[in-house]
Amino acid sequence: MRFWQAVTVALLVTGYAGYYLCRSDLSVALPLLIQEMAAHGIPRDEATTRLGTIASFGVLAYAIGKFPSGGLADFLGGRRNHLFGMAGSVLLTFLFAVSGGIPLFTLAWIGNRGVQSLGWAGVVKITSKWFSFSTYGTVMGIISLSFLFGDALSRQFMSALIAYGLGWRGVFYSAGGVLAALLLINLLLVKESPRDLGLGEPAVNPDNLFRDAGEKHTPASVPSLLRTFGRSRVFWLVCVLSLGMTLVRETFNLWTPTYFTQAVGLTNADAAQKSALFPLFGGISVLLSGFLSDRLGRAGRAGIILCGMLLAGATLLILGMANFKDVPGWPVALVALVGFLIIGPYAYLAGAIALDFRGKQGSGTASGLIDGVGYLGGVLAGNSMANIAVTWGWKGAFAVLAAVTWLGSIAAALYFVHQRQPEQ
Image (cartoon, rainbow, N blue to C red; front, side, top):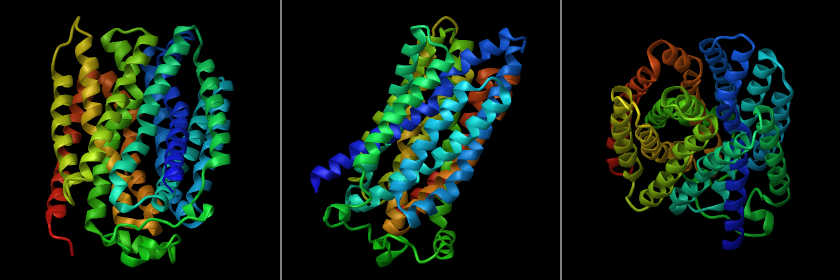
């Protein structure tokens, strides 16, 4: 059992990390795309807002896809979600690379983000069957490295490609090729449940919303799932937290290379490389937060979320107010600090917390709903943040993100109070 648990975690981490090759490629390629559009007579600010609009449409497709993706994982199995998302992303990444204009760019990116929405709910569903509730924080912390260290390594890989002279099309072809190889490995080795190997399944959290029924793999019906979630006030608090933190995370994921080139003065390759610090320090935060939360008791995760959001808001305000002229190291370090403060708490929401409350029966749906609501906020990271940056500069964008983070900390405080109450 321990051997196959380790194999499963390794496969899910590497497989979902591959998704980020085909997601971070747009962020890394944005400076190159803006330069190419400027060379064809489109002003830089207009090119920035156009590409930001494409990114927003992609996040919207991702958010919409999150709502049915959880139900599909609960009713059809997480493995199907995971593999189908990978296959669709490979094909649509190649389509983006052969595209020659805004309409096809938009179509390919919307499709890519749409199919990728299947992946995380599938990963959470598989995890719910392979691990005990007593290790959810640690295990989901490790698996969350897939979208943090995976993102960081993806950016390092693509920055090296740019440094060697590859254009944005070469970056996209390379990303799709690597994900195709990971798809084949996951197709051969990922198992839906220990039962597929004749092994028993670990127990779920007895405090999940479905109680004893949380052990069942398949829900009785979609309405029964939604009624259970709808009656839970703490579930909606988690959704509000997801809304604010996803906006912050998506903004940095998308615009960090552009900010580093336009405001800090780094080269395209150096900006792509330095942008990896945000998910890298986020990954360190996830490991530390996951380990601590399994040992701090029922309110541990909530307390870490509240502290992280308060400190992240202060760091964002410094980015929005301080003058870093001729000292590029400071904004790079502060961006990394925001990643450390916000990503660990963020990773709980659609991971360990979804597993805590929903068990094996509804973990996919819970993860999908929490992520879906969050990415509705993430839609604003594209066009809206681009317009703010063009109108008020990057300092104005960071000030807005600071306000969003501090407003979200109100929901974090309420969630912390709820979790400190005795279990019923």
